[in-house]
Image (tube, rainbow, N blue to C red; front, side, top):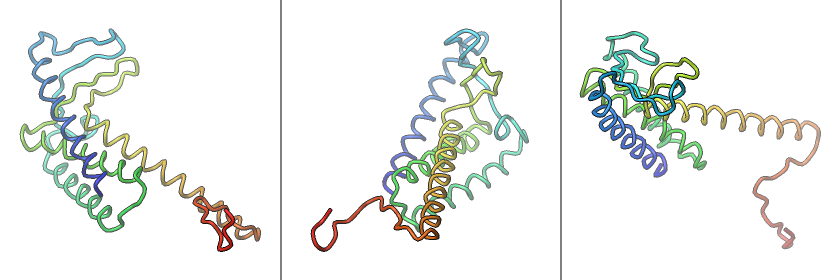
Length: 177
């Protein structure tokens, strides 16, 4: 749980600090956009009043309720299950931290500040919190796939009458390793 809390706090700090400083910088520009790599990667100030990709604009209370429920569910699950995998704890921390980062904006401003503008793929403008949620969800899905593959291999080995491979082999009683 400590990893989840630490990653959550770091994600919220990174998100809010970046939005504060880059938001102020970009609002001060005439075009509210700054090319880091022209036509590839820009910093562009956007006030997103919707959910992902601007969907359902001006329904912030819906997003806030869903965010609170999602964050609470993840934290309760981590507290209850106490996952040993630091990767699961990392994924949970990224998702929760990103959710909290965007929720802070919705409560404080009524919109979410976005600024990462990947023009080489003609994609929506997003922020650090969005990155955290996306990477956290992707990591969690990858971990589920890996665990599913491991379980299937164990079941197949058991069905074939083989000894399943042990990941953390314990020394036998006679001292053999």
